[in-house]
Length: 304
Image 1 (cartoon, rainbow, N blue to C red):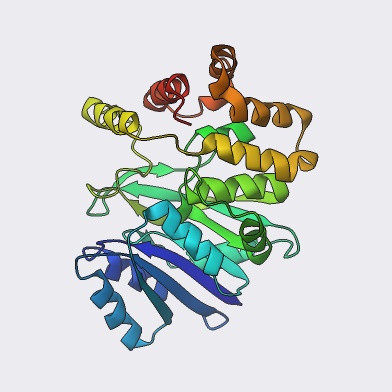
Image 2 (image 1 turned 120 degrees about the vertical axis):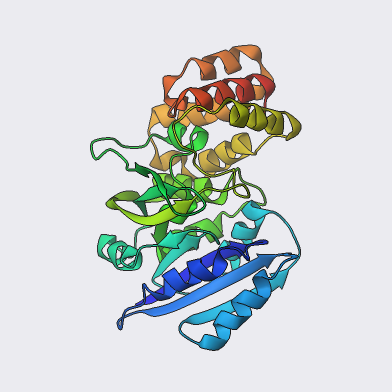
């Protein structure tokens, strides 16, 4: 089976070698394992480390040295240029995969003709891989489309997907999305199937340079204030644009309720009444109190 891993790297010299080694540790005899790294303009030793591991020839590693465009657009570019394979993974530069991550995703595959996305549980850790908590998705709970668009339901590093989903993402690929992983999950939800692997398959490392990731449930007022200030400086994050795209492409595949919700999101900035209707929908408040406060503020300020 052809396995293609997509990694965006930026100033990742501290952890990237450990991460790539964990990918190598996943290789089995029945796998043709390839890693495509797009370096997003690193100024440290990231590129030289990747080149060193290329020379080891333990797995196929292709390296693209390009200018800085940011993590989301970098992953969108990887989606656009991804080589043909049977199974794909998004990969962060600073995590560590358990040795069965790829094989477990292989087992989760069902229908190669249908766009499928597989989400694994994971361990949230600090910079030294000390486990903060196990992030497990409840077996009895399913995502809704609103939760996908407004909540950090799953990080991309916990996702895998088949060729049919890659081709569908390539077909409708926009220039901007809120995040590449949210885009993948939304397209899978609307056009195919989303499955959960109820086992932790990676250490999701949190440290000072990747604060956009999932955070512990413990309240940290300093982090909340920092995130609020960052949000105030940012322009919209393209959620409304994505809702318009999903409605245009997939309205015949989703329920009437979901069609109405997409229409509301697409036009919520046009009136106070639409913002209030959106705020009153409990489905957008998927996470804890910190996320709820930020969601409320971003809707009021038109930041989605």
